[in-house]
Amino acid sequence: MDKLRIMSVFGTRPEAIKMAPLVQELHQREGIESLCCVTAQHREMLDSVMEVFHLRADCDLDIMTPRQTLSTITSKCLIGMDDAIERLKPDMILVHGDTSTTFAGALSAFYHQVRVGHVEAGLRTYDKYSPFPEEMNRKLVTQIADLYFCPTRSNRDNLAREGVTENVFVTGNTVIDALKTTVCKDYTFTTKTLNELDYSGKKVVLVTCHRRENYGEPMQQIMTALRDLALQNEDMELVYPVHLSPVVREAATKYLAGTPRVHLIDPLPADEMHNLMARVYLVMTDSGGLQEEAPALGKPVLVLRRETERPEAVEAGTVAMAGVRYDDILRMGNELLRDDAAYAKMAHAVNPYGDGNACARIADAIEWWFGRRTDRPADYLP
Ligand code: UD1
Ligand code: UDP
Image (cartoon, rainbow, N blue to C red):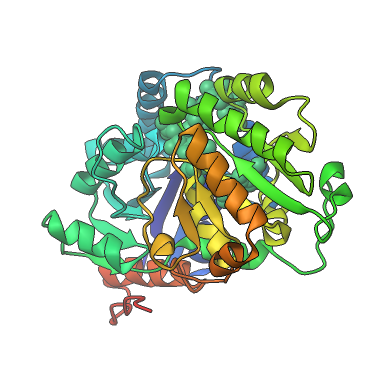
Protein backbone atom coordinates (compact mmCIF):
# COMPACT_ATOMS: atom_id res chain seq x y z
CA MET A 1 0.00 0.00 0.00
CA ASP A 2 1.26 3.52 -0.80
CA LYS A 3 2.27 5.71 2.09
CA LEU A 4 -0.16 8.50 3.00
CA ARG A 5 1.36 11.86 2.14
CA ILE A 6 0.45 14.17 5.04
CA MET A 7 1.65 17.74 4.63
CA SER A 8 1.81 20.02 7.68
CA VAL A 9 1.61 23.71 6.79
CA PHE A 10 2.64 26.41 9.26
CA GLY A 11 4.34 29.78 9.28
CA THR A 12 4.42 31.50 12.67
CA ARG A 13 6.22 30.69 15.92
CA PRO A 14 3.23 29.30 17.86
CA GLU A 15 2.05 27.14 14.97
CA ALA A 16 5.57 25.73 14.59
CA ILE A 17 5.91 24.93 18.31
CA LYS A 18 2.54 23.20 18.35
CA MET A 19 3.01 21.36 15.03
CA ALA A 20 6.60 20.24 15.70
CA PRO A 21 5.69 17.23 17.87
CA LEU A 22 3.01 16.24 15.34
CA VAL A 23 5.40 16.39 12.38
CA GLN A 24 7.73 14.16 14.41
CA GLU A 25 4.95 11.74 15.38
CA LEU A 26 3.79 11.43 11.74
CA HIS A 27 7.39 10.87 10.69
CA GLN A 28 7.59 7.84 12.98
CA ARG A 29 4.51 6.17 11.46
CA GLU A 30 5.43 3.54 8.92
CA GLY A 31 2.46 4.16 6.67
CA ILE A 32 2.94 7.93 6.51
CA GLU A 33 5.23 10.23 4.57
CA SER A 34 5.38 13.34 6.80
CA LEU A 35 5.88 16.47 4.68
CA CYS A 36 6.48 19.94 5.99
CA CYS A 37 5.65 23.17 4.17
CA VAL A 38 6.49 26.43 5.92
CA THR A 39 5.11 29.73 4.68
CA ALA A 40 7.64 31.61 6.86
CA GLN A 41 5.02 34.23 7.74
CA HIS A 42 7.58 34.63 10.54
CA ARG A 43 11.20 34.28 9.48
CA GLU A 44 13.63 34.43 12.42
CA MET A 45 11.06 33.30 14.99
CA LEU A 46 10.10 30.32 12.82
CA ASP A 47 13.68 29.35 12.07
CA SER A 48 14.43 29.31 15.78
CA VAL A 49 11.66 26.75 16.38
CA MET A 50 12.79 24.63 13.41
CA GLU A 51 16.24 24.49 15.00
CA VAL A 52 15.04 23.65 18.53
CA PHE A 53 12.86 20.77 17.27
CA HIS A 54 15.27 19.65 14.51
CA LEU A 55 12.67 20.13 11.77
CA ARG A 56 13.47 20.42 8.07
CA ALA A 57 11.09 22.05 5.59
CA ASP A 58 10.34 20.24 2.33
CA CYS A 59 9.09 23.55 1.01
CA ASP A 60 9.69 27.12 2.24
CA LEU A 61 7.52 29.90 0.77
CA ASP A 62 9.62 32.60 2.48
CA ILE A 63 6.80 35.17 2.36
CA MET A 64 7.64 37.46 5.31
CA THR A 65 8.11 41.18 4.74
CA PRO A 66 8.56 43.91 7.37
CA ARG A 67 5.23 45.33 8.63
CA GLN A 68 3.31 42.93 6.38
CA THR A 69 -0.43 43.46 5.96
CA LEU A 70 -3.04 40.74 6.30
CA SER A 71 -3.75 40.88 2.55
CA THR A 72 -0.09 40.47 1.65
CA ILE A 73 0.31 37.45 3.92
CA THR A 74 -2.80 35.72 2.61
CA SER A 75 -2.16 36.40 -1.08
CA LYS A 76 1.53 35.43 -0.95
CA CYS A 77 0.67 32.22 0.91
CA LEU A 78 -2.03 31.29 -1.61
CA ILE A 79 0.26 31.77 -4.60
CA GLY A 80 3.14 29.90 -2.96
CA MET A 81 0.90 27.03 -1.92
CA ASP A 82 -0.10 26.32 -5.56
CA ASP A 83 3.43 25.25 -6.33
CA ALA A 84 3.91 23.39 -3.03
CA ILE A 85 0.79 21.29 -3.51
CA GLU A 86 1.56 20.53 -7.15
CA ARG A 87 5.11 19.48 -6.28
CA LEU A 88 4.54 17.54 -3.04
CA LYS A 89 1.14 16.03 -3.95
CA PRO A 90 -0.25 15.60 -0.41
CA ASP A 91 -3.23 13.36 0.37
CA MET A 92 -4.09 15.65 3.27
CA ILE A 93 -2.97 19.05 4.51
CA LEU A 94 -2.82 19.84 8.21
CA VAL A 95 -3.17 23.43 9.35
CA HIS A 96 -3.00 24.74 12.88
CA GLY A 97 -5.08 27.24 14.82
CA ASP A 98 -6.03 30.61 13.47
CA THR A 99 -3.28 32.61 11.77
CA SER A 100 -3.32 33.99 8.23
CA THR A 101 -1.13 31.05 7.22
CA THR A 102 -3.78 28.71 8.65
CA PHE A 103 -6.58 30.28 6.64
CA ALA A 104 -4.60 30.55 3.41
CA GLY A 105 -3.25 27.00 3.80
CA ALA A 106 -6.76 25.60 4.21
CA LEU A 107 -8.19 27.67 1.35
CA SER A 108 -5.40 26.62 -0.97
CA ALA A 109 -5.93 22.95 -0.07
CA PHE A 110 -9.60 23.38 -0.93
CA TYR A 111 -8.79 24.99 -4.29
CA HIS A 112 -6.71 21.89 -5.06
CA GLN A 113 -9.37 19.54 -3.65
CA VAL A 114 -6.97 18.23 -1.03
CA ARG A 115 -8.49 17.17 2.30
CA VAL A 116 -7.84 19.37 5.34
CA GLY A 117 -7.23 18.44 8.97
CA HIS A 118 -7.60 21.35 11.41
CA VAL A 119 -5.38 21.04 14.48
CA GLU A 120 -6.54 23.13 17.47
CA ALA A 121 -10.08 23.36 16.10
CA GLY A 122 -13.14 24.79 17.82
CA LEU A 123 -11.71 27.71 19.82
CA ARG A 124 -14.04 30.69 19.86
CA THR A 125 -14.62 34.07 21.48
CA TYR A 126 -17.69 34.82 19.33
CA ASP A 127 -16.33 38.36 18.87
CA LYS A 128 -15.57 38.88 15.19
CA TYR A 129 -12.90 41.51 15.84
CA SER A 130 -11.22 40.02 18.89
CA PRO A 131 -8.84 38.35 18.52
CA PHE A 132 -8.39 39.99 15.12
CA PRO A 133 -8.17 38.46 12.58
CA GLU A 134 -7.89 35.08 14.31
CA GLU A 135 -11.55 34.57 15.29
CA MET A 136 -12.62 34.87 11.64
CA ASN A 137 -9.69 32.79 10.39
CA ARG A 138 -10.63 29.82 12.56
CA LYS A 139 -14.32 30.08 11.72
CA LEU A 140 -13.53 30.07 8.00
CA VAL A 141 -11.22 27.07 8.41
CA THR A 142 -14.07 25.23 10.17
CA GLN A 143 -16.08 25.56 6.94
CA ILE A 144 -13.26 24.12 4.84
CA ALA A 145 -11.88 21.34 7.05
CA ASP A 146 -12.67 17.62 6.82
CA LEU A 147 -11.16 16.50 10.13
CA TYR A 148 -11.24 18.49 13.37
CA PHE A 149 -8.77 17.97 16.20
CA CYS A 150 -10.14 19.78 19.25
CA PRO A 151 -7.92 20.28 22.30
CA THR A 152 -10.82 20.18 24.77
CA ARG A 153 -14.40 19.06 25.26
CA SER A 154 -15.62 22.66 25.21
CA ASN A 155 -13.92 23.22 21.82
CA ARG A 156 -15.84 20.19 20.53
CA ASP A 157 -19.08 21.61 21.96
CA ASN A 158 -18.46 24.92 20.17
CA LEU A 159 -18.27 23.08 16.85
CA ALA A 160 -21.38 21.05 17.67
CA ARG A 161 -23.32 24.28 18.26
CA GLU A 162 -22.33 25.28 14.72
CA GLY A 163 -23.60 21.95 13.36
CA VAL A 164 -20.15 20.37 12.96
CA THR A 165 -20.27 16.92 14.53
CA GLU A 166 -18.71 14.59 11.92
CA ASN A 167 -15.04 13.64 12.21
CA VAL A 168 -14.49 15.70 15.34
CA PHE A 169 -11.83 14.29 17.70
CA VAL A 170 -10.95 15.55 21.18
CA THR A 171 -7.21 15.08 21.41
CA GLY A 172 -5.71 17.52 23.94
CA ASN A 173 -3.46 20.33 22.80
CA THR A 174 -0.19 19.42 21.10
CA VAL A 175 1.54 22.22 23.02
CA ILE A 176 1.56 19.94 26.07
CA ASP A 177 3.34 17.30 23.94
CA ALA A 178 5.92 19.96 23.05
CA LEU A 179 6.40 21.03 26.69
CA LYS A 180 7.16 17.43 27.64
CA THR A 181 10.22 17.53 25.40
CA THR A 182 11.55 20.98 26.30
CA VAL A 183 11.22 21.41 30.07
CA CYS A 184 13.83 19.79 32.28
CA LYS A 185 14.87 20.35 35.89
CA ASP A 186 18.57 21.04 35.42
CA TYR A 187 18.23 23.22 32.29
CA THR A 188 20.96 25.87 31.85
CA PHE A 189 19.98 28.98 29.91
CA THR A 190 22.08 30.18 27.02
CA THR A 191 20.63 33.71 27.37
CA LYS A 192 22.86 35.64 29.79
CA THR A 193 20.09 37.71 31.44
CA LEU A 194 18.16 34.56 32.34
CA ASN A 195 21.12 33.02 34.16
CA GLU A 196 21.63 36.23 36.15
CA LEU A 197 18.07 36.47 37.51
CA ASP A 198 17.45 35.51 41.15
CA TYR A 199 14.43 33.21 40.82
CA SER A 200 14.16 32.35 44.52
CA GLY A 201 14.97 35.76 46.05
CA LYS A 202 12.92 37.89 43.64
CA LYS A 203 9.44 37.64 42.17
CA VAL A 204 10.21 37.22 38.48
CA VAL A 205 7.31 38.21 36.23
CA LEU A 206 7.35 36.98 32.62
CA VAL A 207 5.58 39.27 30.16
CA THR A 208 4.66 38.92 26.50
CA CYS A 209 2.37 41.15 24.45
CA HIS A 210 1.91 41.21 20.70
CA ARG A 211 -1.72 40.95 19.57
CA ARG A 212 -2.93 43.10 16.69
CA GLU A 213 -6.14 44.14 18.50
CA ASN A 214 -3.93 45.53 21.30
CA TYR A 215 -1.94 47.81 18.96
CA GLY A 216 -2.24 51.50 19.92
CA GLU A 217 -4.18 52.56 23.00
CA PRO A 218 -4.52 49.12 24.68
CA MET A 219 -0.79 48.47 24.31
CA GLN A 220 -0.03 51.88 25.79
CA GLN A 221 -2.23 51.13 28.83
CA ILE A 222 -0.77 47.63 29.24
CA MET A 223 2.81 48.81 29.06
CA THR A 224 2.42 51.83 31.34
CA ALA A 225 0.74 49.54 33.90
CA LEU A 226 3.67 47.10 33.64
CA ARG A 227 6.12 49.98 34.04
CA ASP A 228 4.38 51.23 37.19
CA LEU A 229 4.13 47.70 38.56
CA ALA A 230 7.92 47.40 38.28
CA LEU A 231 8.42 50.86 39.83
CA GLN A 232 6.13 50.06 42.77
CA ASN A 233 7.55 46.60 43.65
CA GLU A 234 11.21 46.49 44.53
CA ASP A 235 11.17 42.74 45.05
CA MET A 236 10.13 41.96 41.46
CA GLU A 237 12.00 41.59 38.17
CA LEU A 238 10.09 41.85 34.90
CA VAL A 239 11.39 39.86 31.92
CA TYR A 240 9.85 40.65 28.56
CA PRO A 241 11.10 38.83 25.43
CA VAL A 242 9.87 41.33 22.86
CA HIS A 243 8.22 40.03 19.67
CA LEU A 244 10.01 41.09 16.46
CA SER A 245 7.02 43.05 15.16
CA PRO A 246 8.24 46.65 14.76
CA VAL A 247 4.93 47.96 16.15
CA VAL A 248 5.46 45.97 19.34
CA ARG A 249 9.15 46.83 19.63
CA GLU A 250 8.45 50.55 19.27
CA ALA A 251 5.82 50.42 22.03
CA ALA A 252 7.95 48.33 24.38
CA THR A 253 10.92 50.66 23.92
CA LYS A 254 8.82 53.80 24.33
CA TYR A 255 7.04 52.78 27.52
CA LEU A 256 9.38 50.32 29.25
CA ALA A 257 13.02 50.81 28.23
CA GLY A 258 15.23 52.07 31.04
CA THR A 259 12.70 51.25 33.80
CA PRO A 260 14.42 49.79 36.87
CA ARG A 261 13.93 46.01 37.20
CA VAL A 262 12.60 45.71 33.62
CA HIS A 263 14.55 43.47 31.22
CA LEU A 264 13.57 43.84 27.56
CA ILE A 265 15.20 40.98 25.68
CA ASP A 266 14.98 39.43 22.22
CA PRO A 267 12.55 36.58 21.51
CA LEU A 268 13.72 33.39 23.18
CA PRO A 269 14.13 29.97 21.62
CA ALA A 270 11.18 27.77 22.65
CA ASP A 271 13.19 25.59 25.04
CA GLU A 272 14.58 28.68 26.83
CA MET A 273 11.09 30.16 27.05
CA HIS A 274 9.48 27.02 28.43
CA ASN A 275 12.18 26.55 31.06
CA LEU A 276 11.98 30.22 32.01
CA MET A 277 8.23 29.84 32.46
CA ALA A 278 8.84 26.86 34.73
CA ARG A 279 10.90 29.10 37.07
CA VAL A 280 9.06 32.42 37.19
CA TYR A 281 6.60 33.65 39.82
CA LEU A 282 3.89 34.98 37.52
CA VAL A 283 3.04 35.30 33.81
CA MET A 284 1.31 38.37 32.32
CA THR A 285 0.48 37.95 28.64
CA ASP A 286 -1.87 38.40 25.71
CA SER A 287 -0.50 35.22 24.08
CA GLY A 288 -2.68 32.21 23.42
CA GLY A 289 0.07 29.63 23.85
CA LEU A 290 1.25 30.98 27.19
CA GLN A 291 -2.28 30.65 28.59
CA GLU A 292 -2.00 26.91 27.92
CA GLU A 293 1.60 26.32 28.94
CA ALA A 294 1.75 28.26 32.22
CA PRO A 295 -1.11 26.35 33.93
CA ALA A 296 0.61 23.06 33.11
CA LEU A 297 3.71 24.43 34.85
CA GLY A 298 1.79 25.66 37.91
CA LYS A 299 2.23 29.36 37.12
CA PRO A 300 -0.59 31.89 37.58
CA VAL A 301 -1.44 33.95 34.49
CA LEU A 302 -2.96 37.40 34.15
CA VAL A 303 -4.36 37.71 30.62
CA LEU A 304 -3.85 41.12 29.02
CA ARG A 305 -6.94 40.92 26.81
CA ARG A 306 -10.66 41.62 27.03
CA GLU A 307 -11.69 38.02 26.36
CA THR A 308 -10.26 34.55 25.90
CA GLU A 309 -11.03 31.53 23.73
CA ARG A 310 -9.35 29.41 26.41
CA PRO A 311 -11.81 29.44 29.33
CA GLU A 312 -10.70 26.10 30.79
CA ALA A 313 -7.83 27.43 32.92
CA VAL A 314 -9.91 30.43 34.01
CA GLU A 315 -12.49 27.94 35.28
CA ALA A 316 -9.71 25.96 36.98
CA GLY A 317 -8.68 29.17 38.77
CA THR A 318 -5.08 29.50 37.55
CA VAL A 319 -5.72 32.13 34.86
CA ALA A 320 -7.49 35.46 35.42
CA MET A 321 -8.57 38.11 32.94
CA ALA A 322 -6.83 41.42 33.68
CA GLY A 323 -8.09 43.14 30.54
CA VAL A 324 -6.36 46.02 28.77
CA ARG A 325 -7.00 48.93 31.16
CA TYR A 326 -4.18 50.48 33.17
CA ASP A 327 -6.01 50.47 36.55
CA ASP A 328 -7.14 46.83 36.33
CA ILE A 329 -3.74 45.51 35.27
CA LEU A 330 -1.88 47.42 37.98
CA ARG A 331 -4.39 46.41 40.68
CA MET A 332 -4.42 42.71 39.74
CA GLY A 333 -0.63 42.61 39.30
CA ASN A 334 -0.10 44.22 42.71
CA GLU A 335 -2.53 41.81 44.34
CA LEU A 336 -0.62 38.75 43.11
CA LEU A 337 2.72 40.29 44.04
CA ARG A 338 1.72 41.39 47.54
CA ASP A 339 -1.04 39.07 48.78
CA ASP A 340 0.36 35.59 49.45
CA ALA A 341 -3.10 34.06 49.93
CA ALA A 342 -4.36 35.43 46.60
CA TYR A 343 -1.21 34.11 44.91
CA ALA A 344 -1.44 30.65 46.52
CA LYS A 345 -5.03 30.32 45.32
CA MET A 346 -3.87 30.59 41.70
CA ALA A 347 -0.51 28.80 41.85
CA HIS A 348 -1.32 25.15 41.33
CA ALA A 349 -0.62 23.01 38.31
CA VAL A 350 -3.62 22.02 36.21
CA ASN A 351 -3.66 20.36 32.82
CA PRO A 352 -6.97 21.23 31.19
CA TYR A 353 -5.25 21.34 27.82
CA GLY A 354 -3.85 17.87 27.52
CA ASP A 355 -1.88 14.88 28.77
CA GLY A 356 1.00 15.07 26.28
CA ASN A 357 -0.43 12.43 23.92
CA ALA A 358 -2.37 14.67 21.54
CA CYS A 359 -0.12 13.98 18.55
CA ALA A 360 -0.51 10.20 18.82
CA ARG A 361 -4.30 10.63 18.89
CA ILE A 362 -4.22 12.91 15.85
CA ALA A 363 -2.00 10.50 13.89
CA ASP A 364 -4.31 7.59 14.86
CA ALA A 365 -7.35 9.57 13.74
CA ILE A 366 -5.78 10.32 10.36
CA GLU A 367 -4.88 6.66 9.82
CA TRP A 368 -8.39 5.62 10.86
CA TRP A 369 -10.04 8.15 8.54
CA PHE A 370 -8.01 6.87 5.59
CA GLY A 371 -8.99 3.28 6.49
CA ARG A 372 -5.49 2.35 7.59
CA ARG A 373 -6.55 1.29 11.09
CA THR A 374 -9.76 -0.19 12.40
CA ASP A 375 -10.26 1.61 15.71
CA ARG A 376 -11.30 5.23 15.97
CA PRO A 377 -9.12 6.79 18.69
CA ALA A 378 -10.92 7.47 21.96
CA ASP A 379 -11.59 11.12 22.76
CA TYR A 380 -9.46 12.71 25.49
CA LEU A 381 -12.09 13.64 28.08
CA PRO A 382 -10.38 14.09 31.47
C1 UD1 B 1 1.01 36.46 13.89
C2 UD1 B 1 -0.40 35.91 13.82
C3 UD1 B 1 -1.00 35.80 15.22
C4 UD1 B 1 -0.08 35.04 16.16
C5 UD1 B 1 1.30 35.64 16.12
C6 UD1 B 1 2.25 34.81 16.95
C7 UD1 B 1 -1.74 36.54 11.86
C8 UD1 B 1 -2.57 37.58 11.22
N1 UD1 B 1 -1.23 36.84 13.05
O1 UD1 B 1 0.92 37.80 14.37
O2 UD1 B 1 -2.25 35.13 15.14
O3 UD1 B 1 -0.61 35.13 17.46
O4 UD1 B 1 1.78 35.66 14.76
O5 UD1 B 1 3.43 35.48 17.23
O6 UD1 B 1 -1.55 35.50 11.30
N2 UD1 B 1 8.62 39.81 12.27
C9 UD1 B 1 9.95 39.67 12.03
N3 UD1 B 1 10.52 38.44 12.20
C10 UD1 B 1 9.83 37.36 12.64
C11 UD1 B 1 8.46 37.52 12.92
C12 UD1 B 1 7.87 38.74 12.70
O7 UD1 B 1 10.63 40.62 11.66
O8 UD1 B 1 10.40 36.29 12.80
C13 UD1 B 1 7.98 41.14 12.08
C14 UD1 B 1 7.80 41.50 10.60
O9 UD1 B 1 8.02 42.87 10.43
C15 UD1 B 1 6.32 41.19 10.37
C16 UD1 B 1 5.74 41.59 11.72
O10 UD1 B 1 6.69 41.13 12.67
O11 UD1 B 1 5.79 41.91 9.30
C17 UD1 B 1 4.39 41.03 12.07
O12 UD1 B 1 4.31 39.63 11.82
P1 UD1 B 1 2.85 38.98 11.48
O13 UD1 B 1 3.01 37.53 11.29
O14 UD1 B 1 2.21 39.76 10.39
O15 UD1 B 1 1.98 39.32 12.76
P2 UD1 B 1 2.12 38.82 14.26
O16 UD1 B 1 1.71 39.94 15.13
O17 UD1 B 1 3.42 38.18 14.46
N1 UDP C 1 7.55 31.77 22.87
C1 UDP C 1 8.90 31.55 22.61
N2 UDP C 1 9.77 32.60 22.76
C2 UDP C 1 9.36 33.84 23.13
C3 UDP C 1 7.98 34.05 23.37
C4 UDP C 1 7.09 32.99 23.21
O1 UDP C 1 9.31 30.45 22.30
O2 UDP C 1 10.21 34.73 23.26
C5 UDP C 1 6.63 30.64 22.71
C6 UDP C 1 5.68 30.41 23.85
O3 UDP C 1 6.25 29.60 24.87
C7 UDP C 1 4.52 29.73 23.15
C8 UDP C 1 4.49 30.40 21.80
O4 UDP C 1 5.80 30.94 21.61
O5 UDP C 1 4.79 28.35 22.94
C9 UDP C 1 3.46 31.49 21.78
O6 UDP C 1 3.66 32.29 20.68
P1 UDP C 1 3.04 33.74 20.55
O7 UDP C 1 2.81 34.32 21.91
O8 UDP C 1 3.91 34.48 19.61
O9 UDP C 1 1.68 33.48 19.80
P2 UDP C 1 0.20 33.09 20.27
O10 UDP C 1 0.26 31.88 21.13
O11 UDP C 1 -0.36 34.28 20.98
O12 UDP C 1 -0.53 32.87 19.00
